[in-house]
Length: 500
Image 1 (cartoon, rainbow, N blue to C red):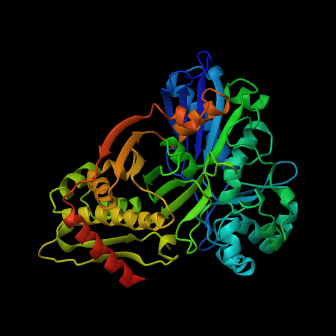
Image 2: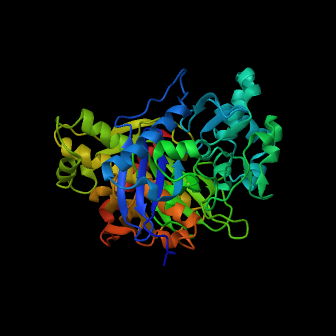
Image 3: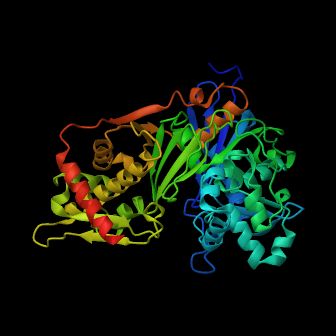
């Protein structure tokens, strides 16, 4: 049971690349009291050159302030009752500050690909075996390589950098005025050495980057600083409110779905699709189809590694079909109802949903979306709706089978109730082909961050205790008669391999 804390609230902030979300949770009952989002439309992503993606960190902070004000205005709750703050953030980004704490250049965010060749060169120089043992990944296009790009291409700006950090580190700094990062965060930037249990000194030396540019390492759960008086006054919360949790969005989403122990798996089916599974030993994929990072509860003596599969072409395929294929005004529920009238396998229509750029699990190949087996006298819009959902589900299964080769047992998969897992066609296809139970839970990243902040101030001894009251909204059990699913999936895989 939680410790007594009076009538306090826990505040969770979830910084995405499209918006900032916030949640307010009752510290005693774990009940979600309010949710908010800012802005109402998507934040801009600047692309000065092809393959680039940048955002202004000051804009993030502007929307953090706005969303907190919105949270209390719409709920009518008392901001002075906030007891702790937790932060979730978009992974793999690079934020650079000068000695005065001012932003040096726009943040290079997760979907920016300018540093791909830098990471490849480093992998060749250090050797794949070394990288896989020490970093569980190649340097790739992650934060360390992005910092090297700035060093090589913007030397005058690089000379001004005093701190290089992740997006969540920046938000915590704006709240507290204190610099810090976490092992989980460093690992997602390929800045952590799992063998030495310290910074990735060999990679930093290869890049000629001074490790002093990185903030001090703080615990993922625990005191990371206290809210400055000026910020507290602006938000109406108590001065000195502790920030007690931060994590990247995918580890945080897994935590938010109570995926914390070895063998537990979380999934999301938004614009992109993600499967995130927890294993109990440092392990990486030598082919880099999936990536491995320190989970939120990782410790050197009790390893907890999050194996991350990201599928760029997922919900964006379903949204594209609704926008350009369905009749104007058609809802997702109506598309689902029409697709449900079509037999499993969509009468031979196959859709490869990979139309959102290069796919890591396909060896970074950009095969594009493919619509195969179309019969003009047989297939109607409803066939395309079903084939689209099946194609996305098949891509999840294909990726999960890669993860199984790394020792991940996908017997139970947990998902949020605000994305593709609302589709019974999509979820049941995955459950049948992976022979797993899918549990759909009512949770969001901001709610998870809020509850994790409670762990950070000692309300709960373990994050699984904090997440123990999540509401189960739907369960999909694997069925026994699945020959049609298997036949359609194998045909889909055959078509995919022809493209590779």
